Length: 123
Image (cartoon, rainbow, N blue to C red; front, top):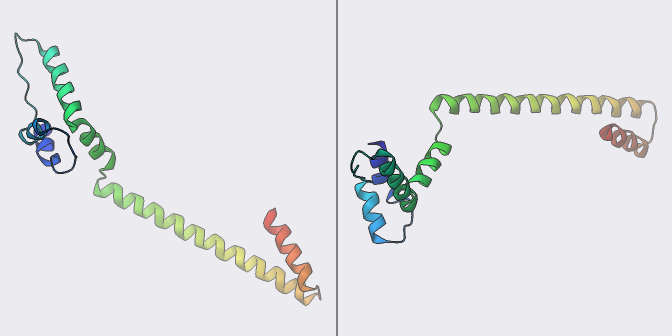
């Protein structure tokens, strides 16, 4: 039942080659079980799904779909990462400003200050 619903929705998403496979997607995949041979029917259904592109579409939907709660968790983690990065940048800026001010008060030339800053950045 789920596969039929996905097949009906997916007709517009996937470019398909033949008209019969488009019709098959629109109707959904139907397989008859003959002589209670369920394994053969499942194998036939899998081949039909692969040929019509439904299997690719189902995998794509599963990979792409996120629940709202997962979206909220990811957004919160991204925000925390951004804030932490901004805090570290602010701390680094204040440290470097203190060093520059200290060195300029001590009478060190600007070129020497740049050398110290570059050495500090490398380490």
